[in-house]
Image (cartoon, rainbow, N blue to C red; front, side):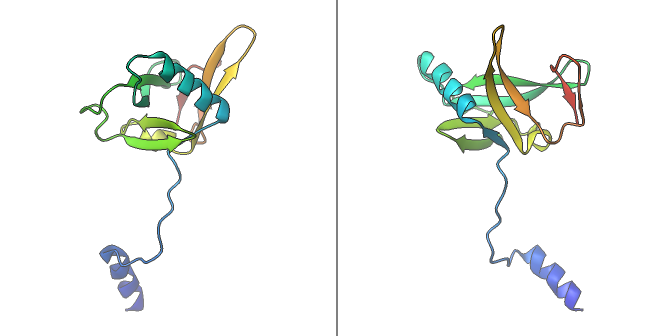
Length: 133
């Protein structure tokens, strides 16, 4: 009977300890600085960037980054993350696939790009464009 009381207590929401939730996405310092630079170049300045997933590539999913200029129906249900002075909107349909992901920005000799380190990814394609979970 005591186990049933604990179960009902959990259902009734009588928890007194606050739940700490891991951020859906985390930015490195270099990624945050690059996003700030890109946002500052646009007039008017966007509210932030939106991370979503698209079905493409040999492994099924790839990341998509877009500016968020207004709070509209498209981003209404997104998870909003504030990190290092940047607002990131995480598409609600992508949320479960990207929780815990780190977004970085890498500058190389030939190319510069945002790189996503996703702990949920089970595999990636050879070129790194897509992943699966």
